Image (cartoon, rainbow, N blue to C red; front, side, top):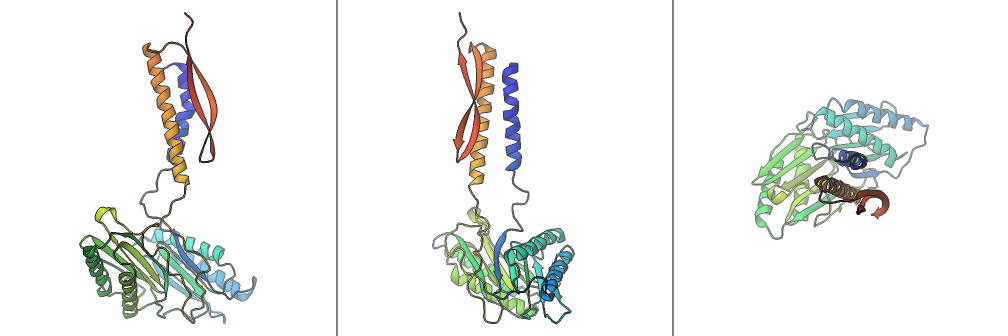
Length: 343
């Protein structure tokens, strides 16, 4: 390869390596800290008050505990009556729980600043605080529901879904020892559920049963769906034909269910539009286009260099940098031209 061409290729190849590294997907494929929904109370507290100090103490205590256990709660010793709780998916490692809860606490502080009560659900954990004495109390209010991947009138999938969800209800468990996580399967449909650890075994079963009923009644023949209630959530997905947990854009009741909270729960859910956590923005497409263009340029450079060395193309090589615009991003694309050698 000639030295001018080799020198021209160095920044191109370097750029390709940087872009590929930036777009490399994270290992594991599931974003455990992805945002699902949040709710804030209408009541507010004054910054600098005792209640504000209690909120800070509660959230710090929860965040510090999350690296060691999947569930913990906090009750303030002050007269404020403040309570706090978090629940991670009990089948995940403690390190994942710790990262998730810290992210949840951060979102509570940013989305519900100075709210007297608030709750946030991330992909793998739930966190809540308030002074409405919610610890140990059942809450089957539907907060968020999503159905996706409809397969038409596939009664077979529906039957397997019902059996898998039924296995969750029959699994038992509950309590704060991590047994509040349940898994079930039937055919190629899998299901899982998670209760908040302040529920006993029967209350957890009742909550999971209510969640299963919501999925059966509200998602038709969807091949994947999930529903979040006040004290538990449940999901199912089909492994046939690439089906999976709904991650946005699916058919059915996408994003429904964050309505008014139940009376007395202290929340005004609906203050935030739930993220569809699997939706992808246009940046991925733009980066793919950029990488494709850079790769094409590099291939052309190598090919022309090969032809020149083989004697198939005679003449001098000229390079120039000309601007191009792709999806609003200005690129300087390396253009290669040739002029004939004088005889």
